[in-house]
Length: 106
Image (tube, rainbow, N blue to C red):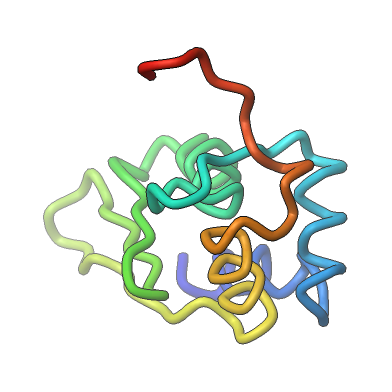
């Protein structure tokens, strides 16, 4: 699972702008300033499609994949540098085209 998630993340691009474009093409959107970046939403949809995956989270630059089978360890890996840089920039308000449009109060 670690290799697949890492390949998926590295496949987003070699520069933060490439990552943004890949996520835009995939339709991934996020909520800047709330820790729900397009990266988090992309992983939640793509990785969680695997029936062995219980949950996918990203916190402090670390991806955690919790598996349904107890005998398998939880998988943790750091975001690749271009993805981490993109996520930090998104949280600061860069890449507004990837922000979800939300109703007031949501």
